Image (cartoon, rainbow, N blue to C red; front, side):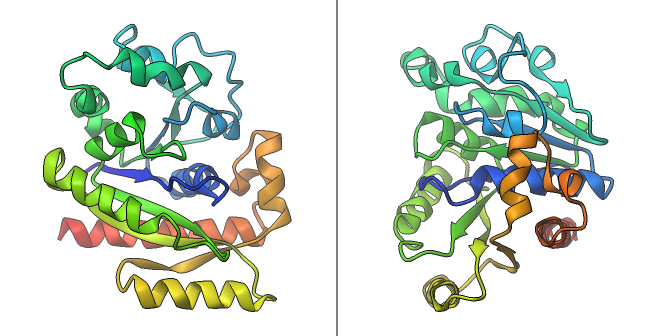
Length: 258
């Protein structure tokens, strides 16, 4: 059964795209068929798996406004078991394009529904804002995975994001759940990182992953080479951490099936 996970946090710079790309790659490495959907106009998930943002003839923009079909946008990456639906800056115009379109919140869901069985996991990299693209992702998704940076303002905006999940569940997708919260950019040498983890755990009592993604030089370098960390530096701490996260995600998926 396909599991659709929206990776979302309206705060930028929290490791959202890094998590979407590397979790996708780690799941694919384990043998799962994975589709990564880039719903961020910045297109960083697209370039993060080695696809030049200027190359695809059709992107999520054309798909969302009805100028392209699912098969026109789907790209097989150079990595085993990993496919991509790319994005570019044009996607930022979708909000206006869809203003008077029926079922505009369901554009992505309606597109994916006939093809869900093609993949084990579909991960959606959301933009760093709570807009129509994010709403489309959450309407299509089963769960929302929230990366949180280990910094002073970690909880800022989290309550708004959780409230958005509740609203989407109430009005658009009654089955939407919180997949989990994953801490990123953790530095064990600082008291701040330790305090942030404890603070979030005390305020959010459920669905927190055991795996914590460390601050890692190799992890920061990988996007500039257009490679997931599992390929760029397969023996690094960053790669090992995303493999552990993938195991946790798979474990939760298995429990859902039972």
